[in-house]
Length: 91
Image (cartoon, rainbow, N blue to C red; front, side, top):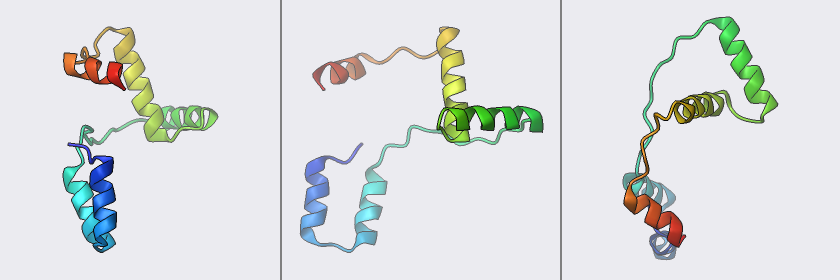
């Protein structure tokens, strides 16, 4: 569950050391990403790195964008949950 602004203020107000504050925030952070190893040939990697630099993205960010765009175009992205749509509408 994400950390609320009030929780962050409380951590700051109570004056705990930075390491314990950081650990508290990390424990509450919701991890929605997965790590994996990708093997890719050198020429393709060079092309991706150049493309990323052209668009001011990291190589990792560019790969995430390429994959997301491919999934979107193929209509393979999961549909947002109803609660996600309600949260976006109220934000």
